[in-house]
Length: 197
Length: 206
Image (cartoon, rainbow over all chains, first blue to last red; front, side):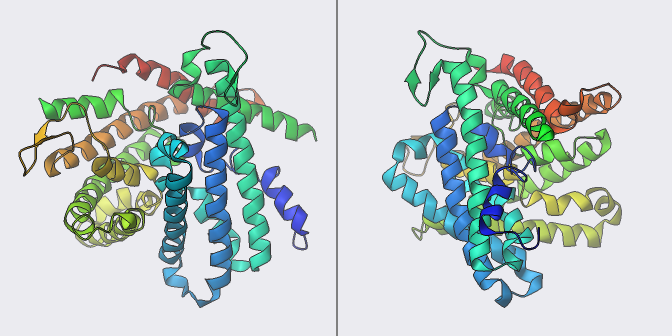
């Protein structure tokens, strides 16, 4: 894995080290924001932006940060980008901002972002870190969209906002229990599929 | 009465883990044994009460008067990180047995979104069952300082209830024969889903 290509780095984050299905990181937004496919997608993209920007910034400044204060410094860098994304969403997509609510400031404590900073960005070049951020972010976005899509289909009988069914679906899938169940079963499916390959 | 409503709403109706999805990582991570679950819940309660106290004061006496609300996320997370560090040092000094019991959980709490999540909710949300009168004489649904701290403690209690119940189930799960792809996290998530369904019975009560 030492000499992996840029594309390899991106693919690695999507399949082999998928943050949601394999590493089981960042569970709170995965469960909390995936009431529909679009919400999951929005959260995924917001996290991906923060992850990419923080990976780039941290890999650029990592050698100037003393080892002992690195975690607080990373948190400040991440929090800055989160605030930025928060205001951009509030200004340009207020409806998404309203639905995601609390989970946007909580990107700060998303273990994926700090995890990639600590495990990858602080020892790799800026370009590699950007690729890693893109791959991990895409993996996260795909996972969130998938969970959101399944919950939306079962829970409200629609997909990406398009109603293909009359009436409502099973409400439980939009509410809390459905989040846990859908994520659990999707994780089983992902394991089953990647096991064979 | 209002404190009872806060307690009931935080522990059962809007349980942080099972209804709001906060703090799922430690919920899945440290719930394999009942005694570690108890230790983690105690540490969370301690930090959350202090953190909510500190961030409430910070928001209302520093950020709002100076119109620096946009620094909320950054300043809250820094306060929480510093607080956790300080609590760790103080406990180590004054009570080594308590440090032995809570020590390993404390660093984990900084990245536990329950603490930041509750701190933000307290200063940002309005609660329908709260009717305080502010300095101008208007009725407000925001919490006052005492209510905020009680709210934090009750949320931590709710976290503890969910975590300890869940760890009891997981101890049993280890002895059962689970199909291979389900082993570990997936079966835990499905169990949590069924627990969340049970907790849904409380919804709409407050």
